[in-house]
Length: 130
Image (spheres, rainbow, N blue to C red):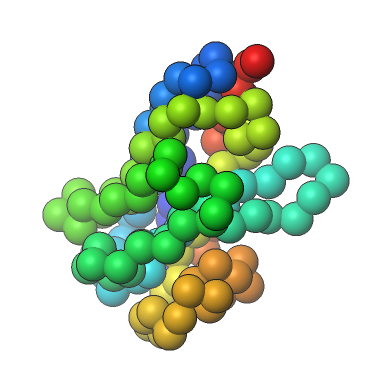
C-alpha cells in the first residue's frame, strides 16, 4: 500500500516562492509515475504537473509552465514541486498523486487525468496573497 504525505504548503505573497514535497512510504516508488494536482472549493481537481518514473519526462499545465518545476528523488522516495512567481490564482489545496498501475507515460493527456492516479495524499494548503 502506497501512502503519500505532502508538506511545505503555507502563505506567501504574490511573486514569492514555495517548495512542496511529497514523501512516499513504498519501496517501489521508482516504478510509479507521480503528479501534483490542486483543488479549490467547488471545483474538481486540476492537473498541475507530472513526472515519469525515472524523471526523464515531465508535463505541466499551461497555467504553471515556466513558473513551476516538478522533480523526484528515487533514492529518497520523494517528489517535489518548486513554485516560483506565485499568483493569487495559484491558491488551492495541492495534492500529490501516484499511479501504481504501471502504465508508464502513454501521452501528455493521459498523465494529466486525475482518474489515472490511484493513490493520493491528504493535501497541503497553498495561499498566495495579493
